[in-house]
Image (cartoon, rainbow, N blue to C red; front, side, top):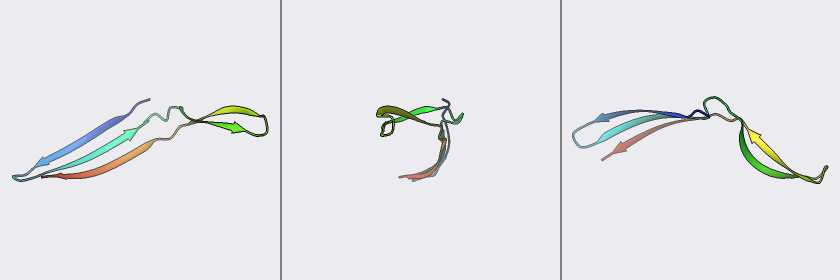
Length: 62
């Protein structure tokens, strides 16, 4: 699994602003999600997900 974060900070006299771009699971690797009960086969099975999450944020610091 590959995850990364890129940040850009601008400093002012009384405050700072920060832009952040974060990408989680950039390669879409299969990861364990949950266990669930299958009624048809009467067994507990595992579910995996391949979700990629992109997060963009802006923060002001005083």
